[in-house]
Amino acid sequence: MLREGGDIGLVLLARGLLGLACSAISGFVVWLAIWSYVHGPALTGNTFIVTLSLVIGVPSGLITAILWHNLETPRRIRWLFALIALGVAIVAPYLVVLIKGVNTYYGLFFGVLRLPVIDVSDSLYTMIIASSVAANAVAAVLATYRMSKYREI
Image 1 (cartoon, helix red, strand yellow):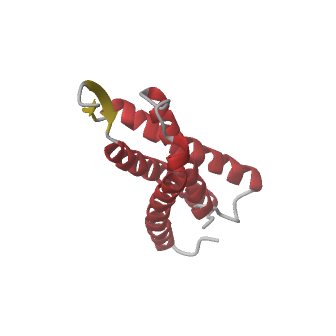
Image 2 (image 1 turned 90 degrees about the horizontal axis):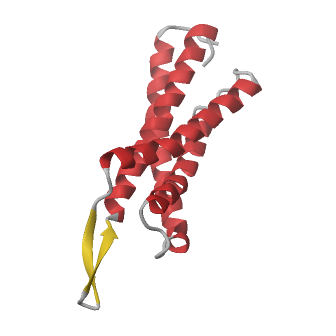
Image 3 (image 1 turned 60 degrees about the vertical axis):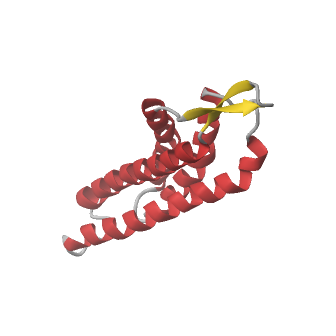
């Protein structure tokens, strides 16, 4: 139960900082672990963005849902909050990259043919930040609602 008004701010700060760090790290580690298996010439354009969004968003959303988990909240509401955080963690990087655009440059193939090459590092950085911030922001809003209305920490 919530004891004082200052507890809400402290809990939000601690969970927010830990959630941002852990979800960003988990997104990068999972990308690093499975990227060599999923990238290839078939991943171009929109397929590349969707695949990278899933590879980064799923672990980031799962870690965010675990770190913002509250045992005082009813089970059905906990599952709903976890699914919302997971969905936002997957959709947010996709939307941010679509709005921002993907940096591409041209590479020479056999010194003659110019092929567009996607800048993976820029897209990766943008998607990790977007996924972590969006999932934790939504989780913080939902947790603040439960803390202020139902006095749960």
